[in-house]
Every structure is written in C-alpha cells, then in structure tokens.
Amino acid sequence: MTLAEEYRLSEYEELGLLRDTEDIYIMRNTIDGTICVKKQVPIALKNIYYFLKFQQNSYIPRIYECIEKGEILIVIEEYLPGKNLEEVLKERCFTEHEAVVIAIQLCQALEPLHSANPPIICRDLKAANIMLAGKDRVKVVDFDISREYQEGMTHDTKMMGTEGYAAPEQFGFRQTDARTDIYAIGVLLNYMVIHKFPLEEIAAGNLGMIIRRCIEMNPDDRFQNVWELEKELFKYQGVESNVVSKSGLEKREYKRSFLLPGFRSGKIWKKSVSVMGYVFLAAVCFKMELSTEERVLTQGMERLEQIIIFLAMLVFIALLFDYREIRAFLPVLNSEKRWCRIMGFALAGPILFVAAAFVCAILEMLLF
Image (tube, rainbow, N blue to C red):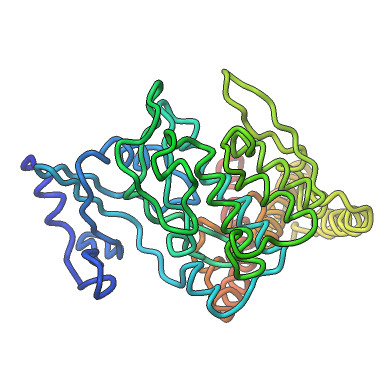
C-alpha cells in the first residue's frame, strides 16, 4: 500500500458491521459524508474490481476505491439501503411482468462484463446478491467468486457457486462462461414467479419455455449470450428489439429506446394521448406573453425564452416517466419511500421553472 493509498483510506471512518455475520463494514467519507461499504477480497480479483471501478454500470454499485494490501484487495463501494431480492421474495411472489423486467435488467448488468476482454463471469447470480434500489431497479452486489474466462481451459480451477442457482459446469464438468450466468437468470426467473427452483417445478406457458432454455444441462442448448436472452424477454413483453453485431460483439439497439414517453410501448392509444399532450404543452408555452411594460423583449428573444420553458417542461416529463432511467441519478425521485418521491416531484417542477427563468435572465444580460 502506497502512502497516497493510505491517505485515501484514512478519509473513511468506520461506522460498524454491515451485518453481524459478515466482515463487511459501513464507512463514511469524512470529506463529503458519503456512506459506503468496505470489504476485503482476494488480490486475485483485482482485475475484476478495477474493471468495475472504471467501467461504470448503473446496475452495479459504484466502486470508489480499490487498494492493494499484500494478498488482499480493499474495496470501498457504494452503500445500497433497502432489501435484497431474497428478502422481498420471502414476502411475496412477483408477477410475470415484474420478474421479466428484473431479468432484463440483469441481462443489461451483465452485458459489459460479458463483453470485457477477457469476459467476466459472475458465477453467483442469486436473489441474495441482487438489491432492489428503488422502484423496478436492481443492482448486482457481489462479485467475490467471479472469474475471467480463459480461452482453452476445459474446466474451472475451483468449483464455486450457490446450490440451486449454480449451473452444472460449476461443479467441474467444463469451464464456466457467459451461459453460466444465463442459467442463473433462468433459475431466478422461475423462483420469482412460483417460489420454486426449476428442479422442483417450472413455470407454465411461454415464460416457462424461456426458463427451460436458460437452464438446459448442455450450455450449447441455452441462450448463447445475454443479448439473445434479452431480445427474447422483450419479445415476451411485446416490445420489439433489434440486436446487431458490432466489432464481433452483439450490441443492443432498441428501436424505441430514445423515443419520448408515450411512444415507447408502441400502443396506438398511448401515442394518441401523448401527441395531444405534447401539442397542448407546446401551445401553452408558445402562447405565453413574456413581455411586460417594464420588460420589453424582441420577438426573437421572447420565442427563445418560450423554447427554454418548453424544454424545462419536457425535462419534467422525462423525470416523471423515468425517460432513459434518468431518475437513477436522482435518489429522491428513486426512493423506496412514496412520500419522498411525491415531495421530490412536487419540488422538481418549480425548480425546473426557476432554472429556466435563470437561464432566460442570463441570456437577456448577454444579448442586450
């Protein structure tokens, strides 16, 4: 550990154990007050944790520090309050729609890992390692038995995994790869819907068919990558997707991913209501009289300010409907507490309007 690393580590104050049975500590950054988590992992995992640190993923906790100390790696990462998926599943089953939404997010969490060079395999994708951070938002929190795929190996050097979730190849039959994580997603899908592992019973219908393919004994018979599985899950939800190949890697390009709220589902009635709503909003904004006796604006300046106000209202709509998952960057709007979300939205509108007025005032100062 270098002097600089010791200094960085000294900026964190230990608050206590995260759980009584784990050697994981809750920490506080004494500089900015950020609450985080400290744990120690084998130094062999350093490439994986450095990758997670520098390749940020909204479905994985942010890694603040990776500090090498002999044969261990000290990791300080984002603290995630709330319940994990296992705790929630003790209270209720999920609907098929809810389960598929979570499975899609797990695919998206794994995409950058499986695309890494070499690919990173999670190997322990289970309910206890998945946090529900806000409404319909998941985060994968444990990569302590992850490994890098090694070309040419016939099997893993160590047999690791959680019984029930682990694919057959995790018990020494062959090397684990991306399809190992796909097996675990299939198990999770089944457990979320009917509270049973596939060995006990498999969900019925089309979802059951997807699960069966995920958990095939032979990895060659499963979905071959998370993009393929994700496409099938979107198809199950009735949403079209287009998966293309780029630089030898399949990348997602969803036809509706950048469409405005109201147009992403493809339903005619939602499109019609949205068109009327956006037209009404534009009419209100562009009919606003911004000139007064004390404040006379040119026609061009008035139209520019109307556009700014219109854009501010579009941002509010984006927040309201979580466009491109924008609320993930605003904890208040993504809180599990309903009152907190309501207060956040109640304040968001006025704040955006004031921000628009401030921008308009700056422009007037610059242009007049």
